[in-house]
Amino acid sequence: MEDYLRILIAIISFVLLFVGCSSNLNMGYYSVLQKDYRFNINAPVVIMHDVNDILSAYYVDLIIYELQKRGFTSLYKQSELKLSHARNAIFIRLYKEVKPYPSVSYNYSVMNDGVVSSCYFYGEKFYCDNSPQKTLNLTDFSQRMDYVLTYHFTLDWYDVNTRQRIMFVDGSVRGKTCGYNYVFRDLVYHTINRMDFTREENYNYTSPLPRYWVCD
Image 1 (cartoon, rainbow, N blue to C red):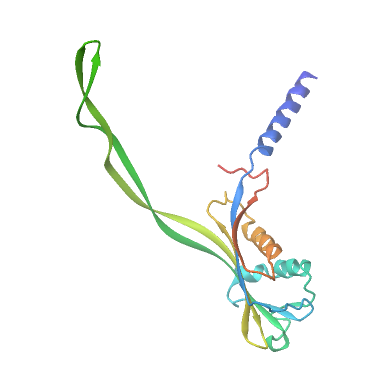
Image 2: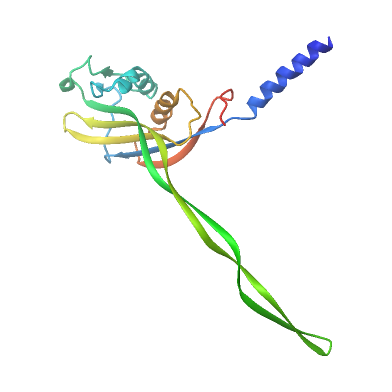
């Protein structure tokens, strides 16, 4: 019985460890749109991508599903509907972007900066104390090139009849992802669910990783 209780306590402690240690994805949302454009959720919309873009093609079904949840009823893949028969066309792209940025480290040391006399009266006598002045001085610096990885999901929305762009959306995940395998899936979900068809937006937010996902 005691052994059973020890095992049970160990399991509970292990679970609580992961419950208390969850990490976040640093995400962003950016959108611009043509003012006063009226989106018709019942009009035929074709989802398009570069024919050689295997990554974007993989997520087309998920994108259609999430847009259907937003109320759009006539969504098609580019192989299912000719562009001339659509009211709107959405050009999608999912990709990774690596950007370099310089990182500079500075080293300081404490040095004597001359002598400062501190004088004072003590009783009827006058005293002076010559003490060195300590200051921080830059002694060295080093520079290195770091890199930041950003995941992007973009939707470039056009009116086929007028051939004008009516909306552009860029959802992103920047920085540490802890080896999470579903970054693009979550990015598609959050970006489409945050789309506002009445105003432009630009902001950052966080999305928690699953509690079981360990992140150093």
